[in-house]
Image (tube, rainbow, N blue to C red):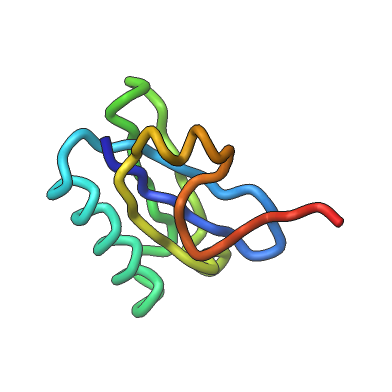
Length: 90
């Protein structure tokens, strides 16, 4: 299972969708990346393959980052998902 994670401006928690195949996750990542570069489409919609019916729509102008990673058992044991952002409370 692969996670496509969208980080929004001014929002601490990311939005995620899960894809079963790496190619599908890469395609979703690439469409988000292309939308960030061009601003087109204005609204990006992604669907989740793990939870049928789960959809995420976001204004591209509010996207700060997008990442894709493979879901693994090590992420749940540490309590954090892999990636570039670490949310910590001080």
